[in-house]
Amino acid sequence: MQDLVRRYMEKGISRRGFVRGMSALGFTAAAANTVLAPLEASEEAAEETEASAPATVTGTGGELMVAQMKAAGVEYCFTNPGSFEVGFFDAFTDAPGMQLIMGLHEGVVISMADGYHRVSGKPSFVNVHAIAGTAQMSGQLYNASRDGSAIVITAGLNDNEMWSDESTLTPRPGFNQKEVNRQFTKISWDARDGRGVPLALRRAFKVATTEPGGPVYLAMAHYALEAKNISAQILPADRFLLRGKVRADAASVEQAAKWLLEAKNPLVIVGDEVWKSGAQAAVVEFAERLGLPVCSGVEGFRNFPTRHAQYIGNFAAGSPYAQKADLILFLGGRDPGGRVVPNQPEMPTNVRIIRAGLDTNTMGRNYPTDLALLSDISEVIKDLNIAMKGDAQKISAAAKPRRDEIRAFTQARYQKMDAAMKANFGQSVIHPDELGYKLSRGVDPGTILVSENLTGKYDAFEFGFGGKDPMWLGNTGFSLGWGLGAAMGAALAAPKRPVVCAIGDGSVMYQSSAFWSMARYEMPVLTVVWNNKNYQTVRHAYYAYQGKMVKTDHYAGMYLGNPDIDFVKLADSQGVRGERVTKGADLDAALARGVKATREGKPYLLEVEISRYGGGASSTWFEKFSLAEKRKQA
Image (cartoon, rainbow, N blue to C red):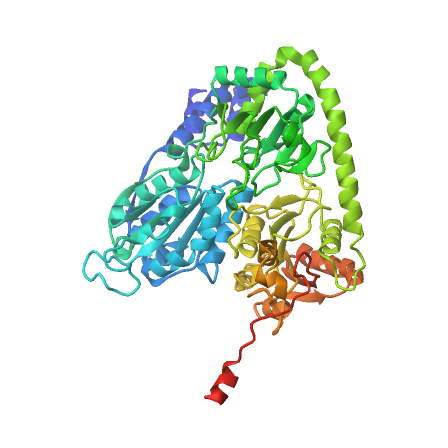
């Protein structure tokens, strides 16, 4: 028997061989398994210790970087490459288990990484070019920073402090590359010694993923990446990433529970920490149990089912529930408002306010806080339920009349909403309401809808969080150029789920090269272009100002026709097939063809001509000018 144990531990025989050997000695299979159990546990412990031990790697700076990326769990490298990263890309060419995903502009690359993180919950890895590429990603980096997306961004660095300070593709004299986008990152570093690159990379992953998450930036000198025969320690992710869930202190939880039980008209405002913590189901159950009306604050996800009987829509200070509230519970959300300087407070100031979440930077920036529960949302819901465990009868008595009232309110709201929507069906030019409705019925169950269309109509969708529910993915920064890249990132993060990108015509032109990546990597995204030949969101703001543009019906820079953009040709030139739809009667069949194409693994585009709505909708005026005519006159 001792010889069998020795041979098994030295990998001389398999598990089956050990059991057979024990049987030959007269032991039963059960007895053999009893002996094996502590041996296997010992072996697993040894393997875990070995896996978490640091490994010393020798090679180029780029090879050290790639080794640390792999140890950190990187799946995809989203990139638009450059010559000052040659040491990295040379090492990446034979790195199994990691896939390069290329975009033709840094903005597309960042939005791909952003969409991947938002859907997977994992940190994204990006490499962009030196100073110019670093600057060009700023619009999408702004979106990622607003929403706390964990993205590790690296870039090559042509050092302007070693010799000439006016070299090609270097920061301007006296400036530093890591300062370019510092306000859009949690922190930025540079590395000039290849031996320090793995450590700097570990630090970047740690900071990006520690709550509240956010993008970080690491510039690496080209000579550091190209340095040869250098050594450094490589650590696995579990040695430098923080995994624990934060919980609020017991006294604060007890106080919050007491106030919730005392409140006559409590109101819940949900934000994106609900989604990020996976607390959606727990929040729904909590709201139902206490009979709480729930509304959305500033959010990039839909953190509460949008057709739930207790969901009252986006928060508005003038709504009846906000006006009568005596307690507001923020769950993982920031203060409402903030778009422009308001004429009056955008939320009640005479109510008790409880805030729960981890992003203390966004808590109470503009409005009071009476109690803060610094906690992961999933944990704080558990703790509040425990704190109120002995008050079931009191909760039930208060919750039922509140539930009945809210459900009557939401039923009337949905009926009004649906009637207004269906009144716009069948018009000569497709109304956005009709497109939104047919899209909601035409996509597959479980579709991820990535939206970059601020005036799109999505009221017909029943967004949720279950396997068959459609999932909403947006952003709160509204810097255009996000949607197509984010849709590709979402598809990579959830390859089994259908992905639809609903995007405005103006937004497409900020990222039109994204179709190339979609075709190259065979990403089955259905892109629906809502083409109204207008920057409609901006026109609404112009109209609200009630100035000269309204009086003349001349809206500066708004009309995107003359010449008309052919989005079908634009996508087709990069390898994505599509079609144009101009009649509502043709929508269902076109959507079916698009969905079928994506089921077959192919990207597809539908360009849908839709009507404009709101003030100035009929205006097609633009600033006419012809340089050719001016040349004739000269």
